[in-house]
Amino acid sequence: MGDFVFALVVICANLKVLFNSHIVNWGLILMVFGSILSYVLCQVAVSEAVMFKASDQFGSMKHVISKPATWIALLFWTLIFALFDYGVEYLFKFLKMRKLARDEKAEL
Image (spheres, one colour):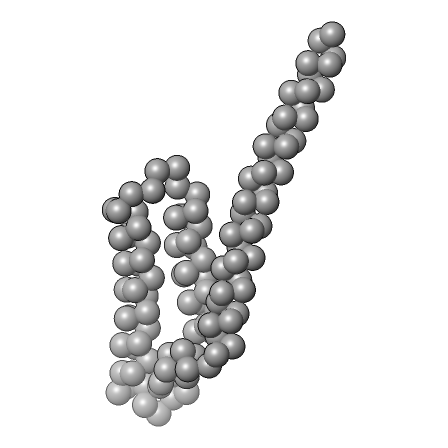
């Protein structure tokens, strides 16, 4: 469970950087997906290391990836994150417009 939660944090943090960037270019896209890929590769290397063979950490990444619920939960949380992020952005825009309208009304 901890492997999945940490993977979710890494993926959502990288997607937040991608979503909140004002300029999206190939460098940013490469950096975000490279970061996610490097995490997955390092986690697989650590979970398949022979020194963890006696512990419950051995093969944990293979166990996490093989479950369909992992992919459904990852998709769900990523979509919820994106919707929440855009919702908060539009809420701030709405509040700003409301304040401006109230200030204009007060000046009249």
